[in-house]
Image 1 (cartoon, rainbow, N blue to C red):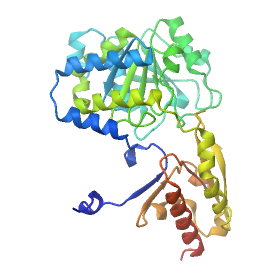
Image 2: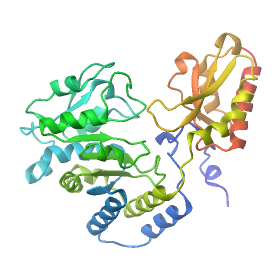
Image 3: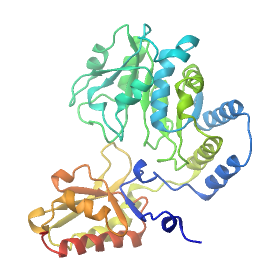
Length: 373
């Protein structure tokens, strides 16, 4: 039998970009796959499954309540809808039918209004919210966040992500203090974050995670938080959540993945450095290439290889080199956020030593080919 790659004429991929949605995010362990298979092959009362897996996850994480959703983006949309609709039955059915007269503004630091693959604002709008920016793109203090709050504010939203501006922005703890002082909930989008408890402990009312990123579950999302707010998120399964429902297999698979995640040893940044050191040494042997270890901008214990190209020497505009690596026989993907500066990053968490050598060889071959015509 031909492989899936052959059957559909798909390229094999080396994922040096990290846990990215465009590449399928992660590869769950065998017991998670088995749990997904079990879920696919059995029937459940879905409401009961949602409630009882949520209670099980909440107990594991020592939080009040939890619910599995289809993805982190759906978690944002449904959390926004939850704080707007609450127990209002008419709004549950008619969220987008007429101008809202209940509080529906969602205040976010301006530097957090990013595109993570889709705009944050689009997810807020799906949930019936109106995004209000606080502060500036390079600065948002607790005072500036508080200044954007009015009687029409339904919640504060904090995006914890490397995509966001990091400098001169308030912390989650500070945002929680502002939320408490003004009597409104704080929603934290922590999609790719690795700590499943700290933001709740800091005072967030709802915290959203991707199930398929750090947790390495199936395509899914997790929302944890205070009991009432999570119950309002669950209600959205009869509202906007119907269009983004998660299957029984996703619910069970993520629950198993969380259980695994809490007990399995994590790969440390130091181990990542050891893994990438030979790769960096080889790259530094290529004329016009300088490589070094850098650390995650959002503060996670993740080390990456930063690769800087002297375009005058390599003869390649970095953006074109990145594109050539994607379009080879094996598609090689990097983190290309700084390609305009001649810099890319390699995330080695999902890459084997053999694959790192393939990446090095491919870069070497392209550069040794000389300037493009």
